[in-house]
Image (cartoon, rainbow, N blue to C red; front, side):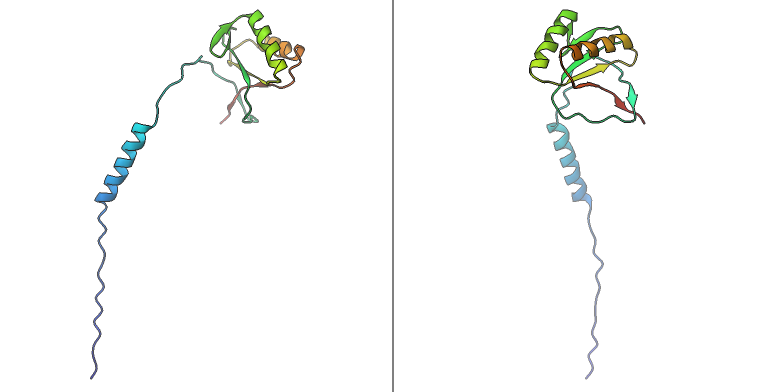
Length: 132
């Protein structure tokens, strides 16, 4: 006797509605738990450069705005305060990062760079954005 083998192939049906629900709930969870705290700061437009590098060390950041105002830690400073902060940074061997606006006078940037060098700070960097 020869028996016929009957093979039934059932095509599977994947219901994606639960998958969409789970993804939607995860999206809501991550949106609610992430913090959207905007840090107040000083608005400057950094110059663009092709050879910029990411600096990983903690720096003393000096911000120079378009109208030659100077800020350290978002606090407006004058030349005497800058000089005293540079002396402290030279004792701590902290590198300096100058964030100068694109329209800031070059003479002001060079003046601050010269003050850093006169205080014995050898690591002075200028912040840029990546040119695209």
